[in-house]
Amino acid sequence: MTSISFESNSGTTTLQGVTRIEFGKRKARVFYEGAENPFECTFHALTSSYFGTKRASKLRKPKDPNRPKRPKNAYMLYCIDVREKVKQELNTTKVSDVQKRLGELWKELSTSDKQPYVDKSKSLSDEYQEAMKTYTPTTIEEEVVLIKIR
Image (cartoon, rainbow, N blue to C red; front, side, top):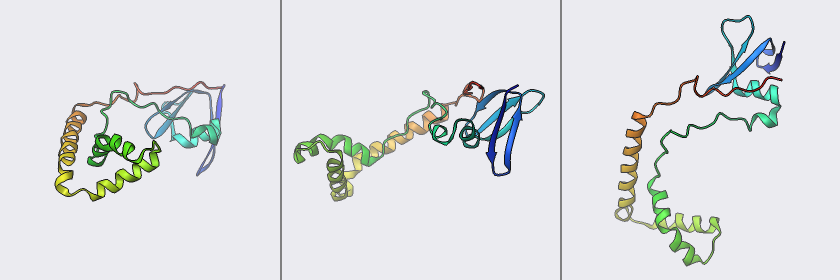
């Protein structure tokens, strides 16, 4: 029989006869022999005790590749348009210098100069909202990540 012990706020918990572990969005479900319902605990409590704290922070549920990407805001759209000009102006490729100058230029722009970027951002946001209405996330059964029990 396989057993898992881990620390939680209520003390040490030991589960005997573990068959598999499923990781959902925020909780982990531990299935073990002789129980109708799985034991639920937080993902971090289970993984940190099972793998150690250093490894627990690296384990994550895989991202859904079908989920629509979030839209860019007006500032980011402006940066995409002006970045090459600023690089040539500063004659440098250091990201920190370029980004600092882009921020200064954005602050100096008038609201009428910012308006095309704001409009484009608004349209991208509307497209994203429509895509999210039609998007159906994968169910818990499809996104289950099984780990091998030692």
